[in-house]
Length: 129
Image (cartoon, rainbow, N blue to C red; front, side):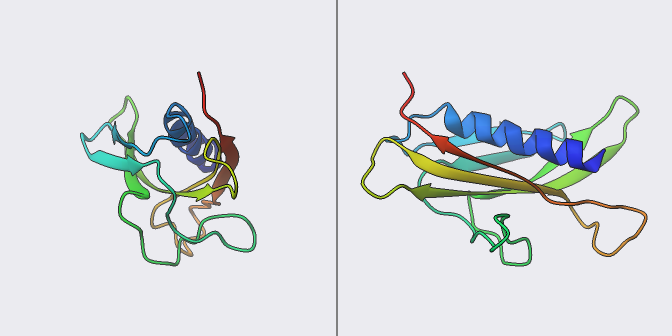
């Protein structure tokens, strides 16, 4: 379940950023069910990508390239996810960027009762129409 939720959140960020043409650097906003508003940068930058291709959750967060997203269900339960993204310019192209988004249940740590692997999505953001 946690992998599905993390994947859905990563996909949401991917889709929001992909809606902005690659040659445009815009700040987007996302509001979660707890009314937390997060600014998302679409310009090149963000946390480092590990050798496994995920974003580094042990490193310090980078402003406008992470969010703590609260997910709510109909029974009043809440879970907070750490979502981070990295946008890389593709050399020689102003019309495409490489986007990596990783998400993970926050504070799962070494708690064996909560298995929360990192879910990562990578894609190319193009110019759009």
